[in-house]
Length: 561
Length: 63
Image (cartoon, rainbow over all chains, first blue to last red; front, side, top):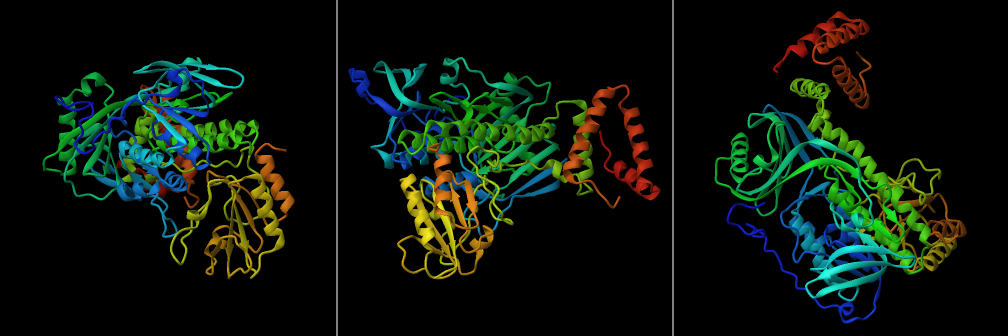
């Protein structure tokens, strides 16, 4: 919602583009079958489209809107999401515009009780978290989509009205300003949001719980001098009954988020006058006396809802279409981005013959597994932010009061921010190798800063990457053979050598690691080999290179043997 | 008190006590908590620790 007298897209800081409708061949009766269609051009759908394009696969991206998301909505982007965006060649504008952060403060009755600090080091290219309004997230992804004009066919003002699934294709009935048509594709990624039309058309339902409590999020513009940190206020003077969150965003925009008291009517609470009064009292509390302008606000509830299966034959559900999670811990957008990449690289491999359909069977265990993990931790956060019973409310008060003088209960106030879910139990992960430390199979790769500048993960490829650790001055012939075999399996395979000294006689890219920092982060010795998935997860690792074994592992992952 | 609970276990204790309060209901929650404290004091086995805990609980005591 926006202040009275303002248009739906009249923002203090963001100029909304208007996307024209473009006539498409289907409207002139030409039968076209697309390899992949994506319903929903939000951050999840756009990420999926870019991932497919990076694999060289064309797709059609549909959205009923003629512009970007109205309002800033999701604002926190995690380090892992930035790593994914880097992989997609999209991260630069994000780095330039977004505000990175590492810390947070929690207050009880206006006294600071907890200093949150997220893991960070100079080895990381990215901050643990960034704040950026969703319109910018979408704008920057759309700019990247523009680089793939021949591969990504974006169709705005195109609304999905019905879905039919046949053996070999998905048929989407769509409505446009120029009439209706049927869009046929071999595969569909449904990224059409919490009220997914695709999901409803198939008669599928999200299952789970609606947690009690309503929350308001409001964006205001003001000159306010405070670092980019998450601030959380329990029982503050401004809102003793509820919890307040404050985040800084680019363009002098601040996000204020508060919980409605149980007895406050949500419809009454979102009236502009009441929104302004509440914000004024919150600003008084934080000592902001200057002027401010109201930009936008919205109301939401916390839910833990998801589909039983994220794959339905030729349709993969991603983002809010598959799951609705509480905001605490910023997992909605971030998990949606990981869903998109997971679905898209697998579909790309299946569509161009690198993998068999069975690869897609790993999508639900990996991504629904991640959702259930979110429910566990976000459930705990929600129970602290919004205690649903008298017992939990009393315990929270006890923990907060004790936190004024003791350290031991302070972690209860930790927001449990998103961390990448591990795929150690995934059917694609090959575990069991004998390593002391390093990055386990099923975990996300770790970054390392290089002495000459740049970072290790800048060098990974769009397909699978093979990371060979070398302490010799010549490449072992078994390593060369492994690289050759893997390149024969995945045409996008990227070979990479991490070496403690110069390696002669090879065309393969060598990353020099004289200090041994990368070796140590990966618990590697001479001949160690890591097989990294296109979505930055370690699929398997070995203490020595056996070309045939490693090739068979990749073939098995791709369902080809 | 040298073997303090790991935070994960403290969280479980938090949930179990909350459930106990809810099971007791508003009329009997104080009695439940008093019995719980007395039992824990017995298990702690050190009066000075119990006295300190009581002082800590009394500090900042506001509804």
